[in-house]
Image (tube, rainbow, N blue to C red; front, side, top):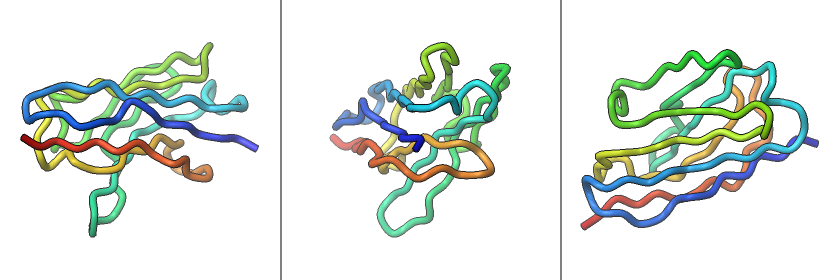
Length: 114
């Protein structure tokens, strides 16, 4: 069974940066569009960035210009570089495929606060 593991979250001040990583067991990366999702307390989970198997990217307006998604198919790994963080970026962040979702991992908490 495929497992998704996210890590790299933490507490950061507004304007700071964090780099999230996602590792997946199983051969899911090579042919799937992958995405980073986030869920803030009391809100629905939202897709903030996606990347195709070929490397094309798409971002939600709320993170465009601040976040960068990347992937390494050979390592079945994906990353999200987050710069210029804002308090409204505070959420649990998850990786998953886009479309036909896999079981969710535990996520990694990002808290942006002074």
